[in-house]
Length: 522
Image (cartoon, rainbow, N blue to C red; front, side, top):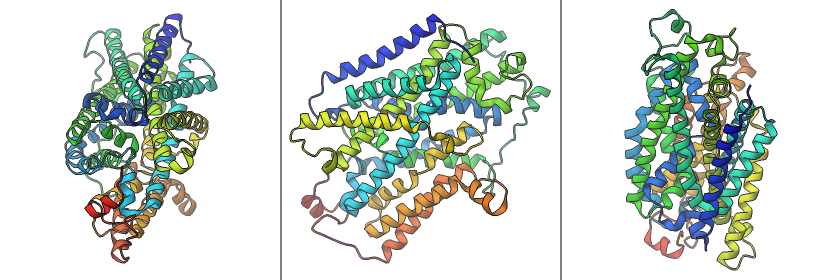
């Protein structure tokens, strides 16, 4: 599609050197795993909050949201309605439970209530979901960067994987969070510079704004969403998209070690709540920026249709290709390099978080395997770094298997991957935190129900095609809420029909002082 100029290469090299420099700088202050895994619990809420949103915004989001805007219009922007609900639920109901104990892995909180088996099962689900997500992120970034630069796909995949792995392994969570802030600024700034360039090319700040009454815009065939739809096969409605936004943020903040680890890196529950509030504001800024970028691309290509990747095709037919093509073929040298750096930044902010969090879980929740023979904290720190190397290598290898995820566009693929195992992780914590009568059997039932149903809904189109011959998937907005509700129901029902097991404090009532004294979670 395009080739990088010398100035572009300088910009990209400067970015790569910068993140590696942060990793080296952070490594100089590391003396124990407390610093390596949770930043000595001294990270500023602003840094932690930006790191949360940077970790959740990947290259897929960076490319898929503008593509979604081009293909289907602004309907997906209704998910931004989640903000006040998500903040209240997570900030005042979830975070106090997470911050009650000074744990390193969030899954330690499950052991007192349900035992080591449930704790490690939840940890394994997290590892599987993040490994696959990281593979998808690396592939998407590598493919886009390869198209823009003309470099071989394998070279770009290795670049993303190796650079992200190096500074993460060197600097630990502090390096991850500081580089996340830098990367967030780059990716947001790159998008706004693209909008500014379009404004200059089209003749003014509002000249690119599409004429909503034009025949050109009507040819896009954007459908106005219903306020509410009871048909599960309808792609979205206003309320279903808002429900998805709430589900994604509440489930992720409750059960995903990537977010939990950032809470744990702050001083206390109040600081963690502030960090989550900042991440919600960051989500608003990111969503607005990327959808405005998509709208600007619509205005640009309607004004200059000869600049399309394929002028014979409609805009919606090549929606996901428009932004990469714009970066490669239309932006000037230097700005192209900055946008390629933004693609790398979006990928690495997800990759570094995954490597750090998975390493933390492996060392903490499977210490008998991964810290065997480590008699000192220095030895544990060294082992954690080698584990991080292994995780980075596995994630890079996984990037070659992502074509198996169904979806009509990048946004659908993103939602399906992020929805796959979020529900079983979430319900385990909900039962532990809020249901005093829940049992280990109930937890297992909830985890199994959530996982099976989420996978079934994710591949619902393919499953229905086996019986009807028609691929008609259930709405992506329903995967998380439906699987979560069913899993919680199953967990409560099974708990009511089983007796609570108490074995020397290994399994007891969450928050019971006697049990805490017998087996401290930290």
